[in-house]
Image (cartoon, rainbow, N blue to C red; front, side, top):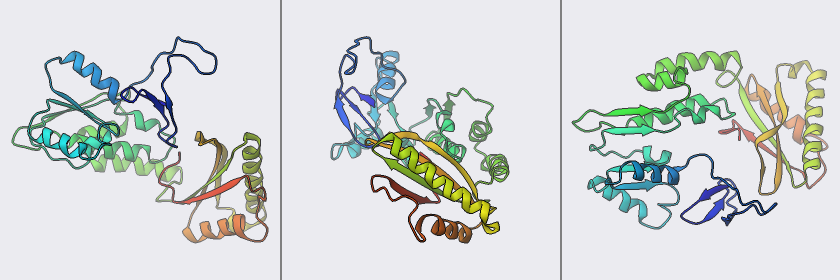
Length: 285
């Protein structure tokens, strides 16, 4: 749950659930609750304290949800009625304003910690895209990255704006770990409202897949990772486990999935347990 001060509410950014912000814990009644972490609202407050005479605006989901709010904000930015713009990644999405000469990126390496093989790729893309907002006019621009991993190859490649440098490092790790483009993936997600059912279901599914690999030479090249708790373990009341499948070819991946999940009797007959298959998953969360 993320605190939204302007709405005085806690909100889940995955299922949309909201509840009123309270000054005490609704489970134990403890009142010593502290807000941890940093978001655009908190960053906006800090910037206003540091630059009390600056005209500060914020661009995030909350501030642009009202109809016409985004257009008004961009018009104010174009008319130079805003000195400092604080925002999420949407700030980087294709806006071209020559007057911007300084871009600061807070926690530039945060997305590197995501449990996803594309974490480095996405971080590099985001940093290059955000950096491109500065110095688009006649005046040169400057970009400041705040990072705890300044020597990471992703940060270094973004610093020099070198896609070749990033590619050479990234492709080495992709090949060593057999991730795309050197394999074809399928993410199998098992969910249930009860923890025991979700846990039992994913293990039943994994045992069948393991048996298929052991009894068929054709499937020996299939790699199974898991079963494991999904990085976001519970959404909308459902517990989530996942199994990641790696196959050397698309044909073998589909053949294995069909035999594993769809041929003959279904591996899980319990209707309370749901199975989702994500081919070439965009995210592992």
